[in-house]
Amino acid sequence: MAKIFCVANQKGGVGKTTTTVNLAAGLAKIGQRVLMVDLDPQGNATMGSGVDKRKLELTVYDVLLESASVKEAAVFSDKCGYHVLGANRELAGAEVELVELDRRDKRLKQALAEVATDYDFVLIDCPPSLSMLTLNGLCCAHGVIVPMQCEYFALEGLTDLVNTIKQVHANLNPDLQIIGLLRVMFDPRITLQQQVSEQLKAHFGDKVFNTVIPRNVRLAEAPSYGLPGVVFDPAARGSQAFVDFAAEMVERIRKM
Image 1: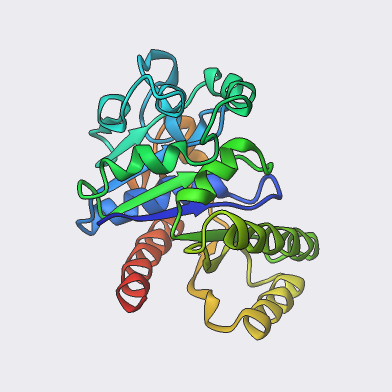
Image 2: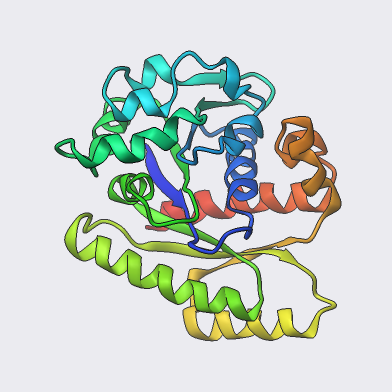
């Protein structure tokens, strides 16, 4: 049965999409069957997985409106080794259309239930706002992976996210929990980042992943080539860190 994880943080620009596509590529590299779901209308995770969002005939929009199944809409990215349920600008319209529909927050959950045995991991790239799309992601997930920079404002954003997850856990999805916090764009030379990192470990304990993703130029360059860093430059420090993170993820799931 597939384990479903949202990569979420209500603060923008913290590396959610970079984390999603590189974790997907890292998991695929160590032999896991992966589906990456892009729930952001910008479609960055789709493009960053070697799939052209402009050429997609079916997207997650069609799945949410129940005019297509996940099997019909998902495409395999040969370059990256995982399946992509892509998104494009059409998805922005789903926000409005879902409001009037019944089971509006459970539609993704029902759609993914049909392919639960086809994958080991389903990773969902959520938009930065708490929208109906994010809610669909949180309602079907077993857990949330929170990428965050070790900066002061990131701590404030984390408080908001934890409260949101508690509300969804209490009212909509009792299985939902924070799987772990991933420190990204980390530069050990900056004293503040080290201090925030220590604060995180003191407060959240083993919820903080051991793997740290360093600030890395090759990871930043990879999206312009339409690839995750793990595929674009496997030898880069950031890419190797994501493969380590994928292995840590698999190990953590075994212990759950």
